[in-house]
Image 1: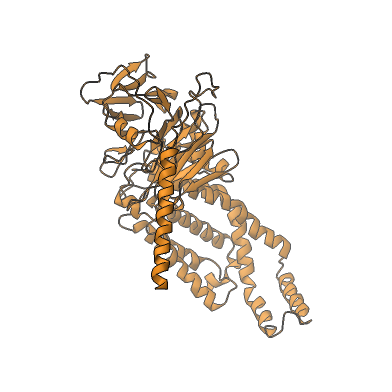
Image 2: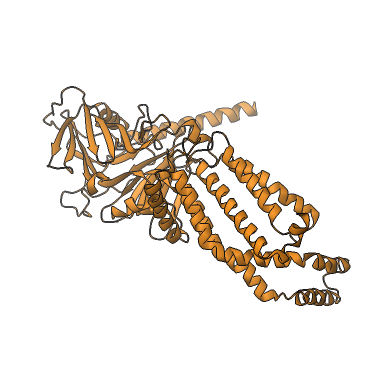
Length: 544
């Protein structure tokens, strides 16, 4: 009986709360978004921005409109295709909704040999460059409406203008190529019953149409969010955007490894955008940005983007420390390719040139390592005699003195030897890392063939280059002096080439080619050092 009374009390309480909620909603309906005053100040980018943010393009909610105000309808006619040609791209819209149909980058080819497509494919709603007001009914009408298309101005930077009105809802969207057609100024406005609605621009889902080969590549990343300002640079995968993210940055965009769509202001002022992740099987980033805005779509090529003078070259991940080396190396790779006509040959020649430049430093490192390996057996013998001592035993000082005597007897100054061994290696590492980074981010390798490899930016289809890299590492180990390590560590070092070959099997073929040629250069230098200083390599001489 008590349980039944308790359940009845809960039911009555719930009914009272529900009735009260319905009653308050009927008495105090949600107000419509405020209309900016005509005299309101702007920041030089058009209408003053509305404070409310759109949490997600798929979950907007704004109140109903006021009493309809009659507007003169715009007669648009039948649906037609609208094409916009620039030096590096072919862009196509439809007059139905003013929607983007295709954005092809003419300089780059996909796996089928066709121009690379930026549009994600299909008919996503919303899709790239769709207008977002925060009202689902309005957004749907804007996507289905037939627009009148006109061109404003003359020359290559003339504006393509889309206009629509049905008497209660009117909209305009205009796209103007700037910077020689390599960037686009986009603006739009939407009014319903005479009221200006907060209008923003959508990009997504994701970027382009990645192939299965690209997705299988080691280290493949889904199209991700990138945001940069004067103090930080942030890149987020879709899985990190479980909740919509408010972005305030100098520029914001959606990027893949080699390409990006970047939004910025012409005056470098802050972009306030909203980013979220789709819930599809293949996750992607979707972005909502304010208007007016400047859009740059294309390859992440540092020099080309820097010429735009918009600051978007920062989207290229050259690195803050390695950047001063990576950028010149990229230019050198292009210059060599321009002469030899193949990026595979250019990688080989540039790798050999870098190895030759760094050969004096490497030579000192090789000799230092050989001297240390020569006395390694004597050092191990001393350590064996004292291995049972604790770290605090006073006799440890005697062991240190004996080791010092071994070095002195063999004419080795530990301070100079350490400097001769470590400093050259430390000086060469930034160049090696920079070369690796350059090949990893260079869009020039996209679609570049070499012998049996159809695309140096993808994995070697026959796995020949990773196999050669592993074999060259084994050969290099056999040439090097025996390290001062125990047999277990030596066996582990022998396994390293196998481990690296497995790791690099699905890496871009261009990287594997560089790694193989770099190992060959190291082997040649090691062999020359052994030839000119045979007294430092007794192990190799005896085995021979």
